[in-house]
Image 1 (cartoon, rainbow, N blue to C red):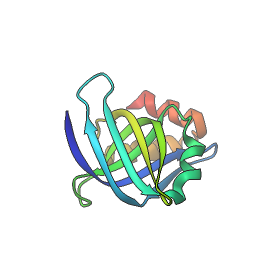
Image 2 (cartoon, rainbow, N blue to C red; image 1 turned 90 degrees about the vertical axis):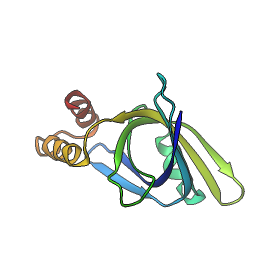
Image 3 (cartoon, rainbow, N blue to C red; image 1 turned 90 degrees about the horizontal axis):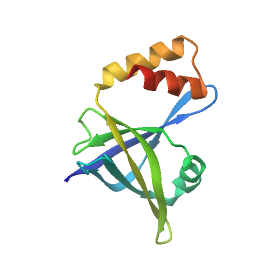
Image 4 (cartoon, rainbow, N blue to C red; image 1 turned 45 degrees about the horizontal axis):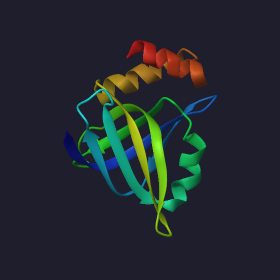
Length: 135
């Protein structure tokens, strides 16, 4: 098992008409490569103001997230995840645990691929299906 510091998190929220990228302000976090069939575990420790957002997407089975590992200036890594748990910590804090697989492509290739699919008119669920087909 290898553990890294989580320095940045964006959640790709797949809406019916578009994909929205939501930046999450972090207090702290970890990225763990479990080196097993369960893949990666990402823990985001953040402000409770994100509670409603995360509970609204908790049941999404294939949630794309973009993370920066170790340093903020590093290129982001993309993960196809699901939320394992959301926990209140104290009065104003929370953590979110994601589990999933890393998407092993460069940021530039992923962005070009998403741009191409959107330009072809894919939206919502069909956009996600087409994206998974092409990666």
